[in-house]
Image (cartoon, rainbow, N blue to C red; front, side):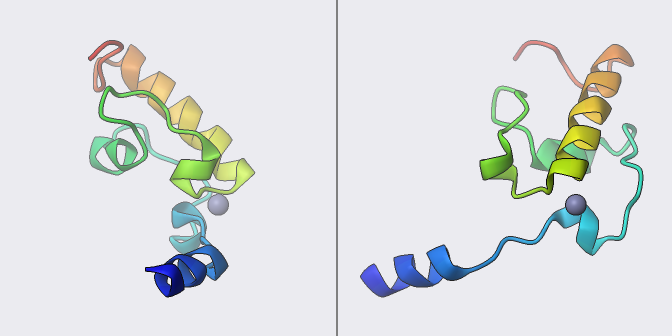
Length: 76
Ligand SMILES: [Zn+2]
């Protein structure tokens, strides 16, 4: 248990969108967006998503856009 925690702590999180070399995040890819949303469709913090600041901002905008297009709900 202890050892696992230490390893987890040392592990560097790599941004999902950086690993995909994505410059833009498509708001139509709801399945990908859902990965970084909480159970009640809230945008998770960067700590929890593991995204870089650049992609976190793009992601937040994509979610808001998807909500406007009724692809994601505003409320659970
Ligand atoms: Zn990134």
